[in-house]
Amino acid sequence: QVQLLESGGGLVQAGGSLRLSCAASGRTFSSYALGWFRQAPGKEREFVAAITWRGGHTDYADSVKGRFTISRDTAKNTVSLQMNSLKPEDTAVYYCAAKLLVGSRYDYWGQGTQVTVSS
Image (spheres, rainbow, N blue to C red):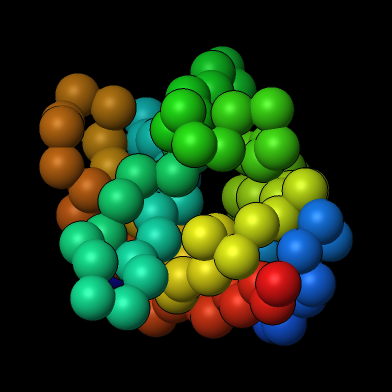
């Protein structure tokens, strides 16, 4: 069974940085992509960034391009999201998720970690 456990959230001032980590376990992820999503109060969950496990190919939402960087450590089975130049509108619960490359839907989700950016 796939398990995803996020860590690294917290409170930061605008312009600051945070690094989120997601520990993935339960299977070999070579045929998977892992992503980060976020959900702000009163809003729908939205895509933030994703990375393929095998080739490390990345994708980003326009709103975070140039500020956030997703990476993976295949030896430690972790995916990280480095968030720089944070803005108050980045405040949300951030979720780690996993999906098979051949599928379009993320089937596995972590419990989420809160990120709060103060102005």
